[in-house]
Amino acid sequence: MPWIDVASRATLAERRWMEVAAGRKAVLLFDIAGSVHATSAICPHHAAFLSQGSFEADMVDCPRHQGRFHIPTGALLRGPACPSLAVYPTKIEDGRVLVEI
Ligand code: FES
Image (cartoon, rainbow, N blue to C red):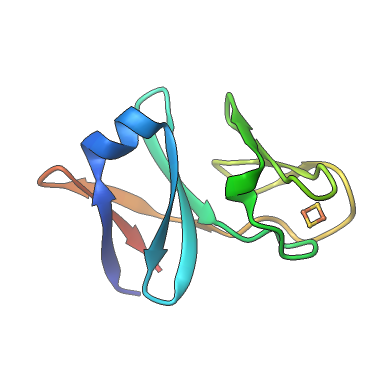
């Protein structure tokens, strides 16, 4: 799997979470207490854009049916039965965030 440069680490620190493109995938980046995480930006239930939902602690809530996912693992914590949210490995190099897709 290739590592893709998707964002400035400093920008993510400022915004706390942001949607980026990693190749053809829409990815959400999160800064959780200084740790960088990446998930799919698309809800696995009915494909809502999670960037239009909310992010608190280590959870992201879907705006459509209020599904709640644990960001580090992608596990469904609340809401309609659906697959887990896809998560992707991340690393930091030279002030950039890279995601393995
Ligand atoms: S589309 Fe996200 S919970 Fe239904």
